[in-house]
Each structure stands twice: as C-alpha cells, then as structure tokens.
Image 1 (tube, rainbow, N blue to C red):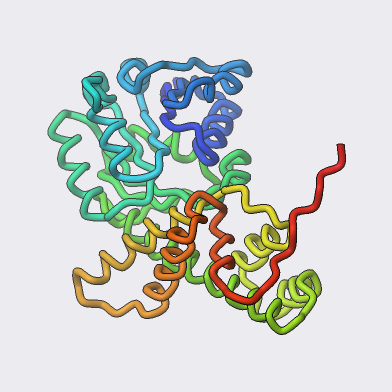
Image 2: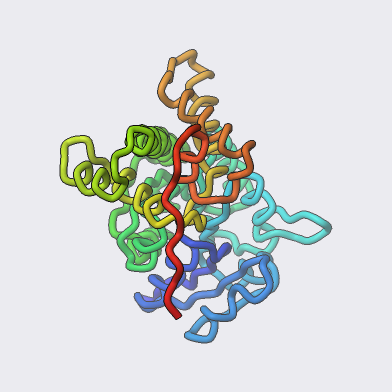
Length: 304
C-alpha cells in the first residue's frame, strides 16, 4: 500500500521531530517554515522545502500543522498579506491535521469550514516534548470523522507512540489537551513554588531536587522543569507565554459553563506575572523568578 505524501508546516521543537520521525518511517516529506533557513538542515537529510504553505499543500495528501495557536493555523490555511494558504491548493479528499492547543469550539468550527471545501480534518493536539516527537513516542489526542481517520490514520500512527481516538468529530481532542495543560501548568507553578520555598529556607537546591524526585511529592514537571532551574538555563523549550495562552484557554472553557478552577486560575496569574516581569520568552520554569527574596542557581560556564 502506498504511503500518503505528508506536508509538515512549522519546524519548531515539535514539528522538526515529527518530520524526522515520519521520514524515518518511510514517508515522503515536504516541509515549510516561515523562518529563513530553518528547513535547510532537514532537507539536507532528505525531504523537500517549500516557500509557502500553498505550494506545500498542492503536493501533499496529508498536511500536518504544528504551529503555536489558532491565529497561526488560520494563517497557514487561509493565508494573509495577500498570500494564499494551504486550503486554496489542497486537493479534494486530502486531510488537514491540526496539532496546536486551541479553543475546542474553534476546532469544531474549523472542521465544518474545511468539510465545506471537500477536505478532511483531524483535531489532533500533541504532547510529550521535542525529544519524544523526534523519537516517535509523543502522544496525540485526536478526534475526527471516520473518513478523516481513514485518510490520515497511517500518518498519525507513523508520527506518535500513542494515538488516542477520542470521538467521531472535532472538539474532543482539543478538550482533552487543554485538561492536560491545566495539569501541566499547575504542576510547573507548584514545582516552582516548592523549589522557591526551599531556597528561601536555605535548603541546598540540588539536595532538595534529589529528595523530591525520589519521594511521593515528585511529579514529571518537577523533575523536568526544576532541572532547568538547577542548571540556571532558561532556554525556552516551552515558553512562559505558552502557559499564559494555554491556561487562558482552560479558564475560558470553564467560564462558559461557570465551572470553578481555583488552582488553574492561580497558576495562570503566576505565568501572567512572570510574562509581564520580562520572562515571557524564557522557559516556563522561569515562573520561579516571580518569588521574592531567593537566590536562584546560576548557569555553569560550558567547557570549551
């Protein structure tokens, strides 16, 4: 059976790993990224780069969008600044796979919009980080109509370790993803709070990290993100502003049904404070910088 040709739009931390995984699994890959030169390294090892999403979509059976938010997805599909987007050149019966964290209602509306154009749509947010994307072990939270799964199922299975099929129409995938982000954001915020308290009380940071990561209070986010704090390295793998956005989506969804989320609301305020304090583009572990009266570990100089 011939494998679908896949177009990947957005070669950031996750998109680059997805493209690599699919190429390693024998798919023909086309890529597009708005940043000059970003696609070059990928193409050097096999693949074809395109200057526009419309050009990429014209030669792809399945288009996978791995951009930041709904606004960027709109641009990918429908263009801006006088340029046409992917939807203008996608062949009838081809499939658009949306991997961003978005408002579930927006995803539902996008499915209807693309179906009206004769295109399939998969609501498919992702989780796991850059390393798992590159190793093919990331998680996908998907929902789609049966015909969309039939068209894109091989691609989904080829890019992720776990593909959860959560419903027969768009929306459920995005709902599950924002619930995951509720937990992720709260866990990062409370991990930072715990480490900050330890520093304030004079506990040696690496000793605290060692004890917590081997005790009942540990979480994946504490173990992962507080390692960045210990290293004094706030290079953004996932930036503070990502959780300003994602926790905002969580709260918007809950607000519509008047459902209380006290911990998510507090965590959102913490990331907002970190963002406005100048840490917006730093790694999300930089939320620890909002706590007063602590001295954070400094970055160690790298040996030449």
